[in-house]
Amino acid sequence: MAIDCVKRFIPLFEKKYPSEKRPRDAINMLKKLINDEVKMQDARKCTYPVLVVARELEKILTNY
Image (tube, rainbow, N blue to C red; front, side, top):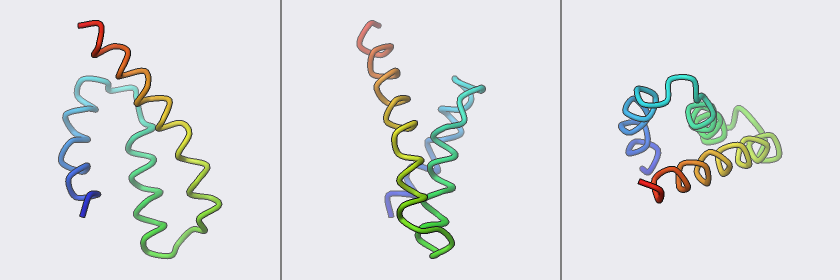
């Protein structure tokens, strides 16, 4: 599953950006969604912050 691939990446990401918790929060929310522990409506609340992180990182990486 894609979540397994992301779990391998998260420690590397957190090492470089230790104060950034939004991606891990999103993964934890996804796990809860998969296990029917939360509703889709609640899981969607987590998507925008992660999108913001992705856009911020894209800007940083393209300026390298």
